Amino acid sequence: MLYTALEKIGRFSADELAFIEQHLVRKPFRKNDILLAEGVVCQSASFLVSGVAYQFSMNDIEENIIDLYLTNDWVINYQSFVGQRPSTTEIKAYSDGELLEMSIYTVHYLIETSPVFFQLGKLLEQAIARNHYFDNALTPLQKYTHLLETRPQLLQQFPLKMIASYLKITPETLSRVRSMY
Image (cartoon, rainbow, N blue to C red; front, side, top):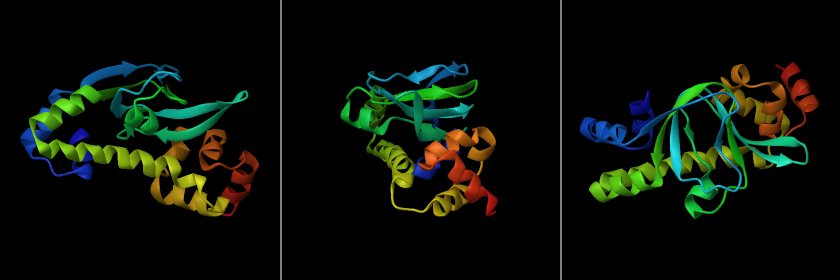
């Protein structure tokens, strides 16, 4: 699964894929573990081997969902990682699971070893694309349709209240949109 995910972001030889894997750290986690706390600088990109997680900010007493991560997704707080600034959001495990962590130091080491590893920067593009898609002017129906077309597995892994927050619509609006299908 890791190799498939890496092949989506660049062209790596079998040896290069194995070299990347050698430098990843395997980390198990439990449901509700904080994978990145607010105020901490994001120092890694992690590949979700199993389990699901989500990124959120606190909005008074509710969680405002920024991103939802499934098995085989890359987990990263883009703004904190790139800017090396404290995170304004948290990333939390929604189930038990395991991830493979690639620290920023590992990324730098890999790039020093060979320019081919510059392709790892495309991981950041994926984070940008997912994080900002639902903040634009799409209608609730368009947002839900896009979700069904691109990431329908989210509906099996997360409650509808979290899906609504991720889509930036109310749970009631999500119910109305779902009834159209």
